Image (cartoon, rainbow, N blue to C red; front, side):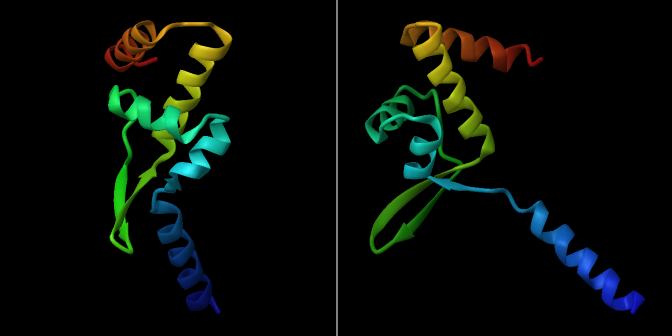
Length: 100
């Protein structure tokens, strides 16, 4: 009984250690943005995919929780605070330099 319980705990611990990755479409829905906006932010190096996978000859971008938080922050800065793209870039760089 104790051996079985320890085995379950080890399995659940292993599962939680894997990072959660999201497809581009999922990030767009969660942040209420278009795929074109997300691709543009990638081209401006504001958001970066955590990984890429190949499916049927196509390369699919996957984003982690940090990229999701960053995309939400960009959305908030742009939509609610009306910060322009250069301002967003400066704010993000400052946040990276001086983490809270």
